Length: 266
Image (cartoon, rainbow, N blue to C red; front, top):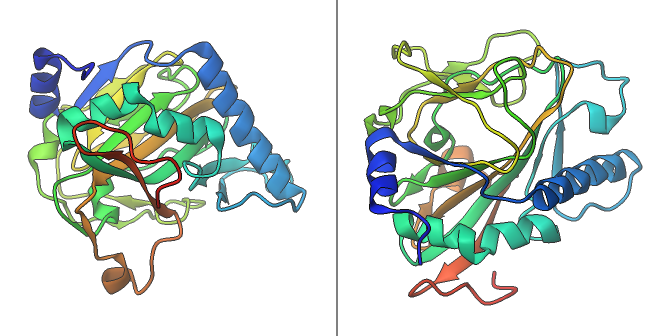
């Protein structure tokens, strides 16, 4: 049964996002942080990290250990146990099914290290990056550490998911991270910050305009993000980009009447 009430769903459809407190335990968030840090350390040591894709933070001192200057680690929901278990857990897929239906794939995952001194990401819509044919996608953002005003939290623009995907320009800041873009043709005056405790979950529509601010604190602000789409979604990435994006991995997690996809399904 879905964990979302009728009021929850109404709020999500009206605002484009919904925050659920204390969705994951401290044990889960601690295990995720440990696993992501280990992947960065293994990458730095030249070890095999399967399909994981580690991207460094361009604004930080490049002589720092990789785990202290990693920006994001993509493509970890298939081979890394703690991330796959969360992606396909009944509590998670109940939420996804209540919005997307009973046939769902997780097509993208990213662990976000917002390191002290890291730049925020400008206003954007996730759907800008997804040249898909099908219903809008759904993001699940799990706070792995506390998100405060001073350590680079998300900001969202309520109701902006009703907008089409807006054009965006390349992020012009020095040391902007790879593929960062910015929406510059829309007013963001009504934006609100999303302050979270470790274990809180944010559900958000792929058209929702959102950004993060710079981390001006001495603390890491970490999060684990999953993106889901209906199984019949048509991915036009190869036609648009000339290749399949390196950060995607389409993994079935739910098939029919709320049943989990078979273990090991591809």
